[in-house]
Structures are given as C-alpha cells and as structure tokens.
Length: 463
Ligand SMILES: C[S@@+](CC[C@H](N)C(=O)[O-])C[C@H]1O[C@@H](n2cnc3c(N)ncnc32)[C@H](O)[C@@H]1O
Image 1 (spheres, rainbow, N blue to C red):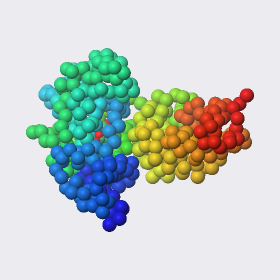
Image 2 (image 1 turned 120 degrees about the vertical axis):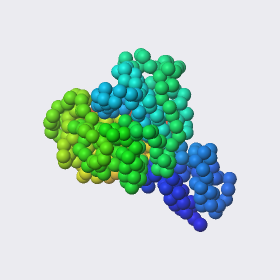
Image 3 (image 1 turned 30 degrees about the vertical axis):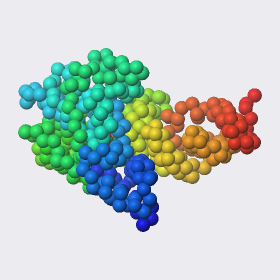
Image 4 (image 1 turned 45 degrees about the horizontal axis):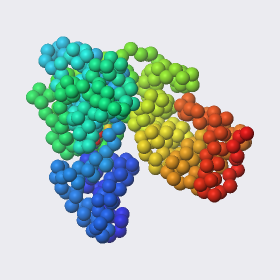
C-alpha cells in the first residue's frame, strides 16, 4: 500500500468518529503529522493497519485522544460576539422571570471554557441563577477550562471591564478565573458526532454551539443541530455562530443581525431572541465608507444589518469579514471569507481576507496558498506579495522570500497601487501599505536577506 492509503484511512475513520469535514485541510494536516510522528518507528507498510487500529480504540485511549486534539481548533475568547451574548442575556432575564428556577445552559464545543465562563459572569452580574455545562472533545482544551485558565490577556480583551475586575485574577502575564466563578461551571468530555447528548429532565433552556459546525460535514451539522433542538426545553433556544454551516438548514430568519441566535424552523422553540438596538438599514457603500473612515462600530452595525436582509449581497459577507478581522475575530473572518467566496464576492478580496485570517489563526500554509492566489489574480498588487514575502521569510524560506521582495521593490519603484485596484481590505491593512514605510521595510529586509543568502539585492537602504 502506498502513503496515500494511510491518509485515506485516517480521513475516513477519524472523519466518521468526530464529524470533521474533508475541507478542513489544516486540521487534517495536523492530525496526519501527529500520526506520522507517533508511527515513525514502524515501517510505513504497517501504517494503514496502525491507523485503523488506533481509530478503533475507545475514546478514553490517551493516544487517540491526543490525535483527536490535533485535529481540533480550539480558538476562542471571552465575550466572543458581544451583541449575541447581550441578546441572550436579555432573553435569559425574561426566561428566568417566566420559569422561576435556575436556567440550564449547555455550551457545546466550549474549547478552553471562555464561552461558558462568559455566560456565567454575565448571568451572575445580572443576578440570574443558572446551571452551566461546558463540553468539548479536546482534553487539553478541557484541562484549561477546568483549571479556570491561565488565559492570555488578549483573550479577555472584549470582556467588559467590570466583569474583568470582578471575576479575573492576574496570573503572571496571563489571567485566571476567580475560583468562586470557576466552580459554577461544570465541564465534561463529549463528542457531538457520536455520544448521546447530555440530557436534563425537562430539557435545556439554551444550547450554545458556536463556531463548531463550521468544522463538520453538512450532514453531521444537520444531524447534530436536529438532536440539539430535540434536547431543548419548551421555549428553549439553540444559539449558533453566524458562520456555522447549519445556517440555511434551519428556516427561521436571523434575529435581525448576524451573528445571531437562530431558532429552529419548527418544534418546541418559540419566538426569536430580542435583538439589541441597531440601525435598521444600511447599504454596502455605507459600510465601505464607515470602514474607510475607521468607524468600526458603524461598520459593524451596518454589516450586521446587511446580512440580516433576506438576500444579502456577496459583498456583505466580505465586509462583515473585514469587520471581524479588524475586531480580531479571526475564525469568524475566515468563515466570512468562505461564505463570501461561495456567494460570488470578488476573488481577490476573498483570498486576501482568508489569508489574513489564516495568518492570525497560525495557519501559515493556508495563508501562503491564499496569498499566492490573490497574487495570481492581480499580479501587480504589491500588498499580498509583501505579506507573502514576510511569511516566507518567517518560515525560513529565504530565497523565495528574497525573490518576492525583489518583485515588490520593482512594483514600488513603478509606483504601483498596493492592491492594483479597489479593495475592501485596504481599510485594515495597516502600516505596510504606506508607500514610504513599505519601501523602507523592503529595503531593510532585502539587505538582511542579501547578507544571509549571498545574493545581491536590487534596492539599497533609502538614504
Ligand atoms: C473554534 S472552537 C469554538 C469554541 C467556542 N464555542 C467559541 O465559539 O468560542 C471549536 C471547538 O469545537 C470542538 N469540537 C470539534 N469537533 C467536536 C466534536 N465532534 N464534539 C465536540 N466538540 C468538538 C473543538 O475541540 C473546539 O474546541
């Protein structure tokens, strides 16, 4: 059997066990690399058999657990999508007044716990009692959740200051949860693709499953969403991330803005969650103008309003992605790039948005591939070329980095436009796009690379 065969077996069996979509190339590469390292001492002819045996083991097998952890993306942060959490909080107030018992909430695919802890903080501050469960497939992520941290400070940046003061304690350069809050959330290992859903007599008041279905096959997402709907209490809510694939599979319209909590098309859930106040209408041009002016709040509301419409324009997804990127919601930005691409938005901007998100999600190969595509679409755009060169340099690929920088230098010499035309990404590209700064940067790096590679450089330092 050849090397492709163990990969095929890995994809078939692991995909079936955890629902991972064949499209999530980065997850598969990580899983493959983890398996290859583990199996390295065995002859390659045995790998198909080894991979099959490993994937037939029970979930509590530590090697299988480690492999699964490599195939997951645990990107999360506190108060992710604040508007959605605020809408949920408003709904929770009404719900608690109606049912007069602690709310029962399940955060499915909770990663390192930022989502259930954000809920716990907001509900405690609002005086709404709740029992909260967080579940995930990844043991390393759950270990951080159970310990209440540590969390790097950038992961709590969106958390309102009052909640930070009340519920976080400094821990070196990071922060931890106050133990009293930590103990209000229970965590459990759970595989959404295979295990029975955690059940409560009477059902869950809300199930949050945000930014998880984007990793699933459509069939798996649909099946899991349906099981979740059946596990809700009467009037309960299933709360998904804006980009989750299941959108389109449930027919109730969004709550007036994306990312939104979606109610099921039929069944036991009732009226949609109340949406926070926002502008009723916006045009694509309004949002573009706001972005260019650096008015991020207005751009965010506008993009949300565009996506809440019945048939959002392809550029609405793109603009929403640019807002996510500017707000450092990189997984959301990447998901928006995919949606924008499927909806037919301009390919150059789609690739550039996807590349910038992938860079920040630490997926260098995806970023490089997308930058290459952007460069192929607009060869005289120097902004993606500069990014590509910096990325290659960081990966230690000095000769191709140098060659790309030479092309950037030539384009700068010609006075070329960074994007070779209009681009919504120009609003977030930052200092690299200033002509003087870029010239200086390119000259400096070319000098350094010339020293390292022994190649002559065309552009000296500016005098
Ligand atoms: C991107 S994180 C989302 C975290 C959080 N919900 C948020 O929105 O910030 C996706 C999480 O889903 C988990 N996950 C992926 N497949 C899963 C499965 N089959 N069962 C349970 N969790 C899964 C991953 O381990 C990861 O922690």
